[in-house]
Amino acid sequence: MSRVVVTGGSGKLGRAVVRELLDHGWDVVNLDRVAPDERLCPFVRVDLTDYGQTVGALTAVDDRYDRVDAVAHLAAVPAPGLLPNTAVFHNNITATHHVFSAARLAGVRNVVWASSETVLGLPFETPPPYLPVDEEYPGRPETNYSLAKHLEEQMAAQLCRWDPELKMVGLRFSNVMEVPDYARFPAFDADPRLRRWNLWSYIDARDGAQAVRRGLEYDATGAEVFVIASPDTVMSTPSAELAAAEFPDVEIRGELGRNESLMSTARARRLLGYAPVHSWRNHV
Image (tube, rainbow, N blue to C red; front, side, top):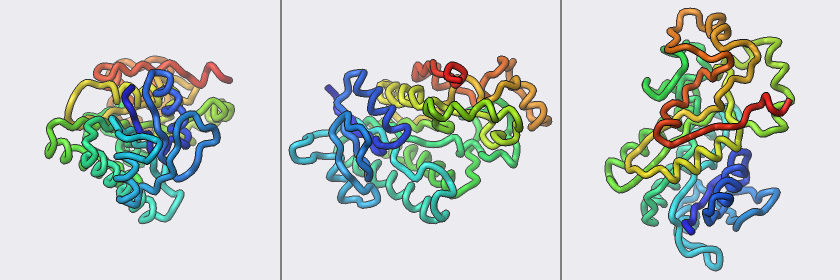
């Protein structure tokens, strides 16, 4: 079996990724600062802001493993505002640089990592150039968290330029949700502005995990980024009505389905085979 280390495997998305990869025949190791509530695979406690620890974890750990074939890098401070700005930026960009560098040192050529929807311009106080948003316009980071994610994408592009055999797939995840989170979704209908900041988008953790697996399986080289969202919005109001009310001057490209996401996953569907199947509407 191919061995993949999942950084941040104890977190909300990480737990789903560990399960998804185990279910599809991967040999999985969880690297995290925090032990998981349920231990499904070997766990190694690692501080990724320490380069020595990161190199050690991506090469061999005594009786746990003696090689790594792929990396799914999810570990990060998961959103702006959880720590002071510089602390968020320093933690995330340092950890990612260490993981990327250690992977190259270890001879790992298959890297998938969690970028973010925030690179698209969240919270959209400046309206997006068009809807649905996609990967075709330049990054528009508006926070230190998003700036770090934007620079991670630039870093990946340059590392792949240095090493033509390297594949690095960045997944711009929308707001990650688990089934218990869906109980509060019906309340969003009372005020559409509550979720305007990310175009009423979300991603079910299980579909996010599928995207990670498909990124690892993607047969290519070079750096790629993909928007990863659920196929629908968090709202009952039709998507076209939401767009017209909150972004009246923004071009709508194509015909929108009733509750179609305003974050386009067309590129991920086409190239990765991403096929989300989970909706909050099936759980409330």
